[in-house]
Image 1 (cartoon, rainbow, N blue to C red):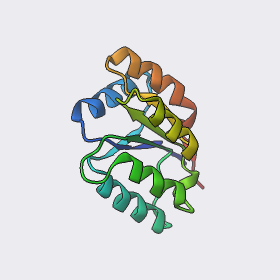
Image 2 (image 1 turned 90 degrees about the vertical axis):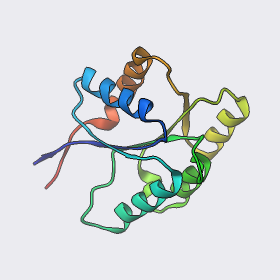
Image 3 (image 1 turned 180 degrees about the vertical axis):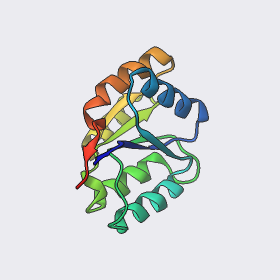
Length: 139
């Protein structure tokens, strides 16, 4: 049985979430897009998914660095330190242009991309992520 791939997006901007959704549709990728608008909520939800062996982990996690309350940096530290979630491909999307932030992401082992401002750039980003979003076979 084929299962639909899923993306867990940690982002507080509804516009960015909508652009990712539209870019997925435009690329012909059927994927479940789940969102947490705060890092603390993301940590709780991802932790619950990882703790429940009956739940399927996301194929891909996208994290915005600049989040209210619990930041993207804290989410990344949680993911990196988690035995199960550290195996899920995770990418940083950020408005930060700071070379220091880019270096810090790389030190933590995450790819960091500038958050696109145009739909066309989101579409390009989704094409790069396509290999992580192939439907999997359950069974």
